[in-house]
Image (cartoon, rainbow, N blue to C red; front, top):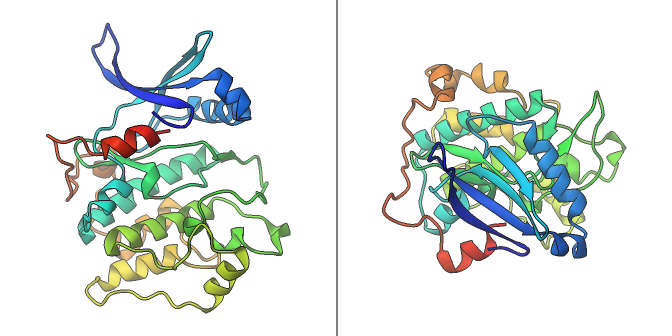
Length: 287
């Protein structure tokens, strides 16, 4: 259960298929001023379906609660596995980058910026494939519009979101920066910049201008150069399309149809026999 909602596992009677069902108390939604957010999240999710997202299948309500029925993913989120001190091998992270790039490319085609890409919001299925969840602060972009509101989790937010000359705004490239930070963290167990949620915007801007990101010598040159393309401070030069990743020499050996069909076996398979979350904390914090 979470702040004003709970998650349970449900089964659809006719197909016997299992799902996760998230339910939220309507009164609490109103009290917390969350109604608009919840409806926006629903509206965005209703239009989406992709192998590397947590997809919404049904939504309904009764007098007390609103219900969302989504893909059931039992492999735990990537934050949990980082906390368990899993060090992800380079090949595993390479496949994660491919899968997540396909998801981001799909979101872009639907004009959606996620704005909160981070290990906490990436869930694994039992085979170890990644799925993006939590569209709570996602935004829809119309035409050439750009966003100016600051939203997200500071350690994963792109430099252009902190720009004091924000008239320029930001666009889809912010999610690709977050992908870079996430990939680096999965490989290293810590992030490329020492930014906390409490770090001020001014300090963060200064850090982006002065800090030098270090890459362990054990990492392949190809992985390092890909991460540098994702962690490019200038959004116009940053990799921010699937084609950028697909055409990168490091990805020459990738069969992209096989990636999309989940035919490639991830190097990390979550534990089958165990609950892949900390029951005391996680089931409280799920939503």
